[in-house]
Length: 207
Image (cartoon, rainbow, N blue to C red):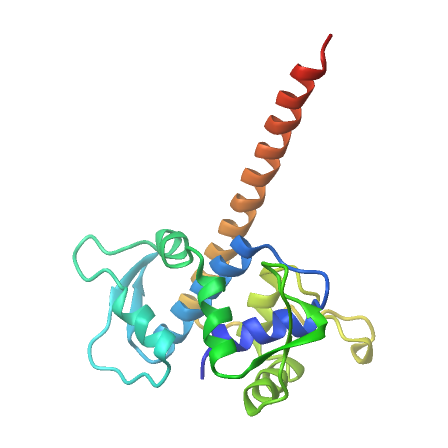
């Protein structure tokens, strides 16, 4: 199971033609990878520090790459630092991997969140698995998607938010909280740059 790949598929399925910021998606993908590493005990958390695990078995190439990227010397890396380091251009990495696997195809339906190429999710067992987790309201996947601004509200729930999942794992809760903080920080940086650029432009308009 690759939560990051499932998340990528859901992001494209749920926001066709709208798009999600590349930086946001990369941060959340890095968090999804970490959550899967925690699940197989390839890593654990000591507070907000990522402690590499011992023996583990991974069947996904990108998850194996993520495990290899863990800092194995003390002091161990903080979750926040992992998100920014591992997340650098990670969305593009996942795009390439999913295209190579045939999970993404060129089409007219969806606009990739980080480019001009129009891609859509192919009808594959991978998409059906991701949709099954999403439609079942799987708490971790719902929480990750919510961090991207994807609304998990379902009309059949009477307007209630399905994206308020019960998370019992303290480590996963820590990762999700850190993801949300990182996404908000990235948005704050964007807004600050936008204001600075607008102010700079106004200087040149003054006669």
